[in-house]
Amino acid sequence: MLVNRIIALLSLLFVHLSSYAGDFYVTPGIGRGDVKVKSEYSFSGRKQSNNDFGFGASVGYEFDSNLLVESNFYRSETDSIFSAFDSYRFSQTRFLLGYAFDVNPYFRIIPKIGYSSWDLDGEEGIFLNPGDEERSNVDGNTSFAQVDFEFPIKDWFSINASYTNTNFDFGKAQSINAGVKFTF
Image (cartoon, rainbow, N blue to C red):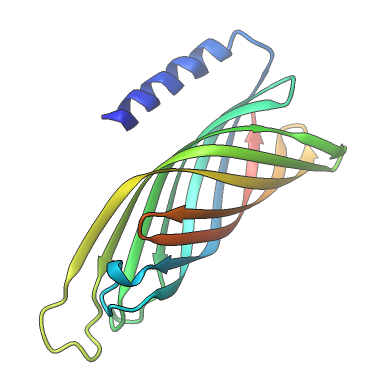
């Protein structure tokens, strides 16, 4: 699989990078987003917009030149009360390349480009649905852009916020996430 090859290559790259000046980092985070599902992929046959709650984590390496490479996993789920309404679970494994612009000692802007391997699982809600609940699964790959805003507190600790807006085969997703970055 392509994703397994990319993970293996990034693992080798991380091991190789440890001989260069720079820092490894880990960034766990949570966020809110909006997944817009095209009518041909929704259970209702109409375009749907679903608010979701997400969580994820990133592992990366930043060179002294401020160039960085990163891999992360992100998963989100739509809000559904007692499975009454249609729900969607969206997960991504992403690989990113970025550059950190130091605006001042307490603020950095980090634009990133990346490649995402994604999966969207849907489950039809029980409200006003007399038959069996349908399930769907759509997956694929796409490129995307993201921007991070970082607020360094200590050399080893930062507060991080990010915004992503991506087009997928099934529609569009955008998210705003917040997290903490631990640098080693």
